[in-house]
Amino acid sequence: MSPKQPRAAKRASFESDIIAVASEEFGRRGFEGFSLRKVAQKMGCAVGTLYLYFDSKEDLLHAVVEASFRALLESLRALPPANSAREMFRNAFRAYVEFGLKHPHHYRCAFAQPSPTPSAKYQPHAAFDLMREKVKAGVRAGVFQSNDAEVITQIIWASMHGLTSLLIARPEFPWEPRNVLIDSLSDALLTGLFRAKPQSH
Amino acid sequence: MSPKQPRAAKRASFESDIIAVASEEFGRRGFEGFSLRKVAQKMGCAVGTLYLYFDSKEDLLHAVVEASFRALLESLRALPPANSAREMFRNAFRAYVEFGLKHPHHYRCAFAQPSPTPSAKYQPHAAFDLMREKVKAGVRAGVFQSNDAEVITQIIWASMHGLTSLLIARPEFPWEPRNVLIDSLSDALLTGLFRAKPQSH
DNA sequence: CGACATAATGAACAATGTTCATTTTTTGAA
DNA sequence: TTCAAAAAATGAACATTGTTCATTATGTCG
Image (spheres, each protein chain N blue to C red):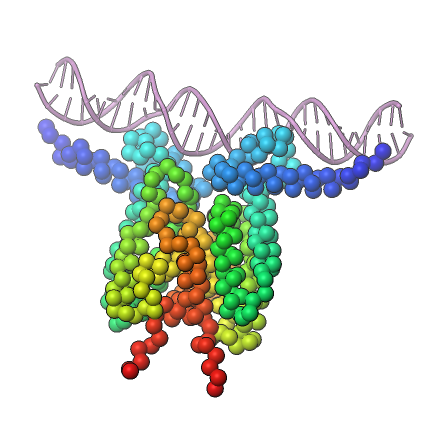
C-alpha cells in the first residue's frame, strides 16, 4: 500500500511539531532553561531524532523565532487602515512593541547573539521591509522632512526596538505606564520626522 | 612579621584581578565562549578558587558588566560642557551609543536575561539617574514641551538603547553610516521633545 | 614551635549539546 | 506476500560546562 501521507509531508509535519513544542518550551523556560532533551521528552522521541530535522540547537531556535516573527509580520499587515500616514505609523509602532511584549523570550532571542555561523541571522527583516515600503510611500507623498527613506526607516526601527527591548530586559524597573511610553515615544519621534502640520498657503 | 598587604587588601586585589581577566576574556569570546575554567587558567588558579570570590558565573559577569558601566558613567560625566541643553543631549546620546559599540559584549550582557536571582540586575541605572537630572533641569528651564521628566528620560533612554542594541545585534545589516543614524535619531527625537525654537515674543 | 583559621585545590557530580554505530521501520519490486 | 535495500529513529558515549566539597596547603598569632 502506498502511504496516505507522502514521506515529505510526514516529515514536514513532524518538523513543525518540533517547532511548536520547542516554541512552547522556549516561551515558558526562556533561553537558559531551554534544553533539547526536554524538547525530545515532550515530543516523545529521542534526542538524536531532533538532529535529523535540525542541524543544531541554534538552528532549531532559529526556526522557532522565525515562526514568531512571521506572526509579527502578519499582525502588521492586518493593521486596520489609518486616516493618515502619521496615524498609520503610530499604530504600527504600537503593534510592534506589543508583539514583543507578548513574546518576550522570542523577541529577545531574535536579537540575541551574533554568532557568525548561520549566515543571515534570525531576520525580522521582512517586517523591516514592510515598514520601509510605508516610509517610501510617505517620502513620495512629501510628509517627511527628509527624503532619505532608509535613514527614516532605520531610525523608527531603532526606537521601536529600543522601547520593546528595554521593557523586556528590565521588568523590575519603575517604568511609566506602557501606553504612555509607547505614545510619547512615537509621537515625539514622528513629530521630529514629519513636516510641520500642513499649513494652507 | 605582619603582612605588608593586609588580608582584605590582598583579597580585594585578587578579586579585581579576576574581574579584569574575566572582562578581557568576555570581551574577546563573548557570552557563549566565556568559561570559568578559561578564566581560572588565565588567572593561574583552580576553578574552585573563583567561587571563593564570586557566588556564581552570573555573579562574576555581573561584576564585569558593572565595572564597564562605571566607565560609561564617567564618560558621560566627563563630557565637555555644551552651549545649549539641546546640544548637551545630542552629545550624551552620541557618547552613549559609542560606548556600547566599543564594548558590544558587555553592553549586550547588561541587558541580557532577566533571571530572577540577583535582585537588581546589572544596572546602568546610575547613568540613567544622571540623565534624569539633566532632563529635570531642562524641564525647570522650560525647554521641553512636556513637564514629565520621567517619561522624557525613559523615552530618550529607549531610543539610545535601541540604536545601540540594533547596531550590535545585527552587524551584517546594511546600515546607513553610524554617524548619520546617531545624529538623525537624536535630532528627530529632540525636535519632537523640545519646544519649537525660542521665538522672541 | 605549634595550633588554629583561612585559602586554595582539583577530583567528582549533574546537566548540557552533539555524534554515530546499532536497531527499527518503511518502501517497492519480485 | 516476501524480502532486501533504504530511510528513520534510537540512546549510549563523548566532551564540555557550572558547581560542590572533602582534602591539602598556607598563613597568622599565642
